[in-house]
Amino acid sequence: MGRDTGPVEKRSRREGVELELKGARLLEGKGAMERRPYPPGQHGRRRQRPSEYATRLREKQKAKRFYGLRERQFRGAYERAGGGAQLLRALELRLDNVVYRLGFATTRAQARQFVSHGHIRVNGRRVDLPSAQMKQGDVVSLKPDSRVEPLVREATELVGRVPPWLLADHDELWGSVERLPEHDDIGAPVDEKLIVEFYAK
Image 1 (cartoon, one colour):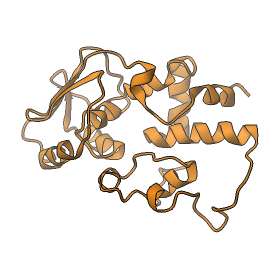
Image 2 (cartoon, rainbow, N blue to C red; image 1 turned 60 degrees about the vertical axis):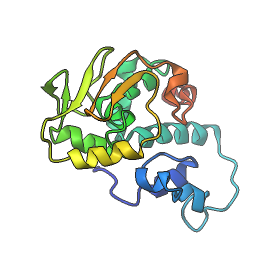
Image 3 (cartoon, rainbow, N blue to C red; image 1 turned 45 degrees about the vertical axis):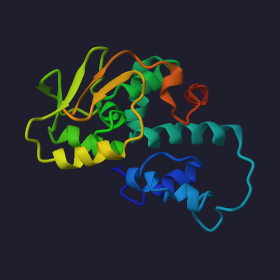
């Protein structure tokens, strides 16, 4: 099954939290969760008591959509991380997420496109794999004279703050991984324990 190309803000409404899928709209206070904070569809306003399975499924779906992964990609990331304790750290250290967290893109989808189209350098070398894992000390920069530089500069003006585990220079358009993210640094609206319980069923 291909990537979901439907309205992205419906995904935030379905999960009940802001998934940061529309960067500029979110920063302008026009996010879907602010206007319609209930699930989409004709039964969206109904109060339902979810089962334990539904609660775990929704948590897994929330994490998957937050980081913009497909089912097989997410399952692979979970297995490579060895379970839930390191899952969020592994997802945060993906190159596309690091580009987004540095403020070089307004959404993770835009960051993924910048990477896959070859506009991003890691330690001076082209890396076009969005899932590439960054390590402490890695330097991420924009390709010199890249066509997307105006978009990147526009994104840096919109960014709020860069996480403490990253260092960003928005004038020269480079950033580095200063240290590995701790659990409190991540800030994803996800309970990884429920994801572990989902896959342990």
